[in-house]
Image 1 (spheres, one colour):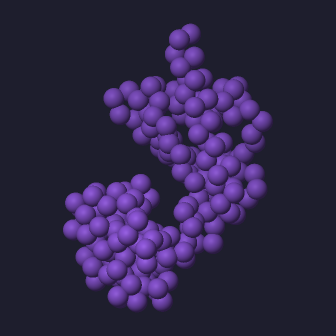
Image 2 (cartoon, one colour):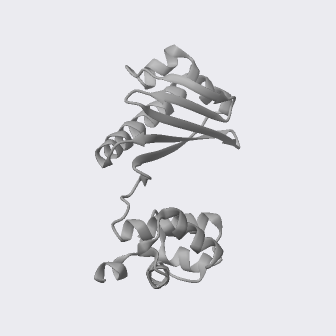
Length: 189
């Protein structure tokens, strides 16, 4: 039980933030779920209970469920079902068209993701890319532009374990930093 009171942040959300939005801190929510028998519920049942019985929004019910399962040792951080997922994002000082092209131009792509081979599975122009990645994993890349800057969010899915998460967090952080540098170089030419 001592662990319960040490929690100050769940998935990046602080106790103060959760209390401001939901009226309770993390440990208070976890106690409510314990009393409701959540230890005997599966993920979907906990989420549904949090939404329907506790009145939380879809977003807060999902976050509470993940936090609860992580705290109780049912789920590891970045785990989704039996697989894992890692997300990385970067805001680039370039218009969306330039960033989108950097994912499609083979010469530019080779400069910031050297030696990487993947297949485009699906694309929604200027919005989303779905990539079939080596090792039977999947990558979803989302793009959005605001005030001439483009935010790129990469979600690498279907990972086997926490070691894959750590390796790919590092990979995507470095790749997006190289993308930023390549785009900056292109703007100065």
